[in-house]
Length: 266
Image (cartoon, rainbow, N blue to C red; front, side, top):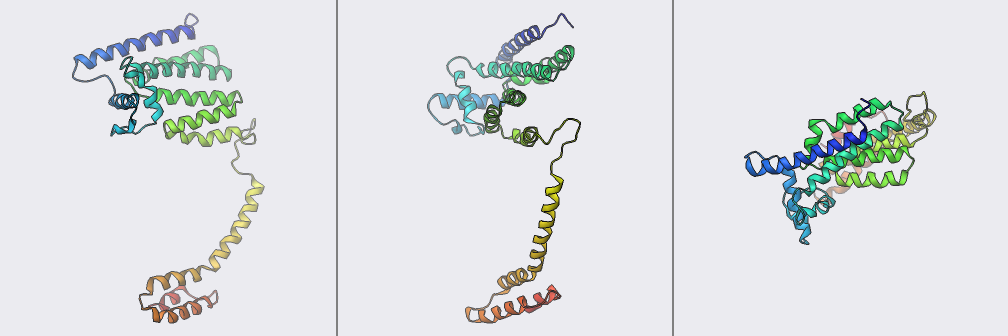
């Protein structure tokens, strides 16, 4: 497909998305089933509140970042489809970022083009943005974070990662992969990633066994205290007898059966 360049593909995809947005306006006006996503109406209402100097959260079902409402404030004074154009533009950026990342990974040109086409010409993806869903912005920011990491811009990647997690909480799941990428010992050439250093893990294991034995040795004291607090339904003047039972319990050697401890308070 040498005749089709990435710029041509992006241009055709942009024109196609504009047509879908215009068609969506017509369908919303003339048909019972709306093309626009219900969430987009919520976004628009919240943006209208913010444009009037009020809190976007006065819209009862708005549970998103205030940045989203701020981004859509032109819905109130330019056109109600402003946000759809923003989301569709982010969708095009996703396609461009895919092509950039694959070229950085030295993927063949044809495969890069096919991969971009899978995104830009996918009915599932192009209807999301044109119907007014904000997910293309999240996808674009995540791919931009990957580009920042590839180019070594760690501070910029951290900024955008914090922003995207603020925007939508679920990108928090990418924290572990990002940390592994930043660790030079995690992904060495020709080696599987090692999450734990073996020597340090052995030292930690021996230290952990020591702590467990100490906790296990004191568990009878803990049991005594728990049963004392639970079973002590007596008056204040009887507390001395209960304390005496606690001392007897804690003085038992390690061979004592915990059932005996229970019997002391029954």
